[in-house]
Amino acid sequence: MTQDVRVSDNAAQHRYEISVGGRVAGYAEYQDVAGARMMPHTEIDEGHEGEGLGSQLVKFALDDIRSRGLHVLPMCPFVASYMRRHREYTDLVQPGQRGVFGL
Image 1 (cartoon, rainbow, N blue to C red):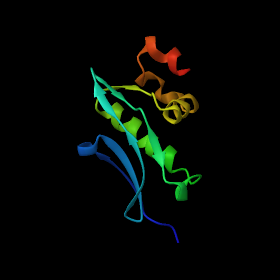
Image 2 (tube, rainbow, N blue to C red):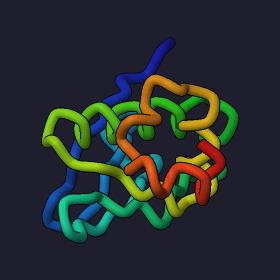
Image 3 (cartoon, rainbow, N blue to C red):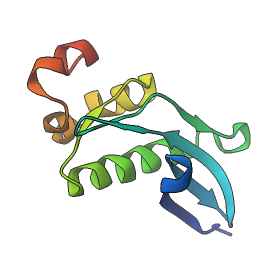
Image 4 (cartoon, one colour):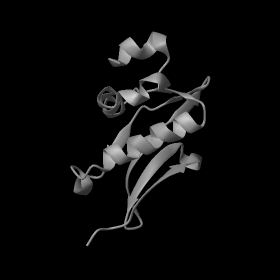
């Protein structure tokens, strides 16, 4: 049986959350700074590692950041790695900062 997976922006806690079966299974923290959304940390509960939830969470976050017209600072290694594998998000990082994140 497949459980219901939902991703949302919990603005009150400054993080994107991914829930499985109504329970938070992971999150990606953010801080807004000068027209950019800095993403310092992403975490998925041990019981859900390897299920692709981290990728779903980061994709949702990057799509949301794009829709808001913001840039991203992928300080979290997982977010930066995701962006290296999905080059369609490279434009979200300012050109002068892309090298710092290997983009």
